[in-house]
Length: 205
Image (cartoon, rainbow, N blue to C red):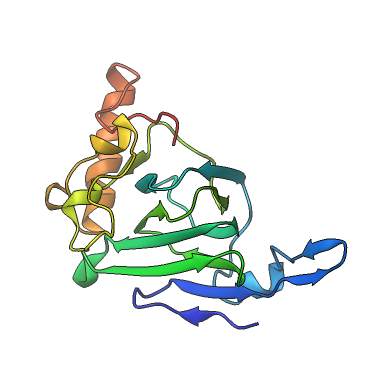
């Protein structure tokens, strides 16, 4: 198995083989040595699983520093169109996507810091598993509105949460790393006065 680089620097895809016999199927989901080859300081802090109906769109999500993270996303059931949006410097707004089919392989997408992630479920039952290098933070949690990026989604009317529908347009964000100082200052200022933040608060993803 080998990580294949995607169009966004620091992002990769790996197609994990599925071993099947009369009992069922078996697949290795994580190899720390493999991951250290692309993210040398990656350590798992949180693990999540999402199950989505067909035409469900989740995202596009990311976290501001200091809680930004590397993320590994692996499909284990169904089909999904995984979409990444670069929020960094000269690549700001650049989009890449990977179609994943768990019948063919348990595909893993490795996502670096400064890249927003989302997906569209293409099957009646789609299961994605996430490993992140930092814990979820309500203060740092944010995202990009799915309709605001330069991407032709195959669904024009997906099932989407109220929270994701209200995420800010990409045109209203500052490119990484300029966004780091701006958002960190907002967090510090708000916490020192009212304990809150102007950043979007999390709900069910």
